[in-house]
Figure: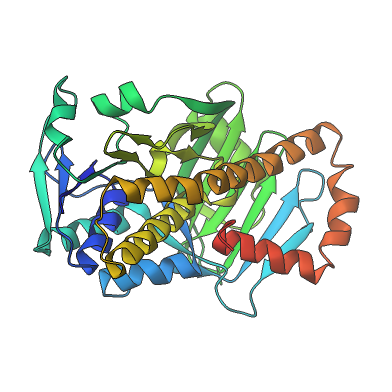
Length: 360
């Protein structure tokens, strides 16, 4: 069987190792030499997904565990409206994104089943170069195939930007993640050590200067004594799901098939769940003696597309609820979450959905 992965990204690095685990050879089409990746962004990973990544990499991945999540609103910043715990176990793991990328990049370079091919993916005849593969998995938006054949999407622009940076602060016991639904948008405090916390501030409206973001951050921060802040990175926020995952022998994957609001830290977790779903489908094919080809993509699309859409819309629903709630001075959230915070069943199933998505 001939398998090709298009894209120089973490999704493909994880996919490649999942194939290598099954002793399936794959080609990864890249556009430049894989060098050390550098960013201050972090990624929150659920326990099951984190365990899965550790099983592929065969060594412990350095992370910081958050054992509780507290949710606040604009009019109640001194007391959370709800919290989520897991019997003093981690609720999720925080990992520096560049460390994770570089760890997987090193691993794939050492695998005899993974081959890196430098190819011009913007070339008009690129599709002819992949037509002889049994299965092509495309998770790269910057190629001619994505631009021509995977642009039909259900979209929503939040007219917002996410600003991410590291806050360096005085040392403290730092294992509680917090999120404030401010009138500007969600502001998340994600601990990555006892003296560093990753900040994700999703601000609606026009782009804001570094000075504006730091002024707002300092206004809302009551958790840490800040010593300094790192470089601020900015990216546009939108929601989309791709209407059709498949073109000929090519399966669209990863960030090409769904993107959601970062307020719940579920975007990357959705992709890992997709990788596990695809891996399970391939295992079934192999066990039945069936070929690993485009039929894998058909089954993957049928089993996951509707779930990804529903999950993305659920996250969007949370965003819209708190947006409306802020317009009504939090008069909606206070009575609702006063009840929900005492409801153990609500918290239990919220945790299950966060861990598993709708793949129950």
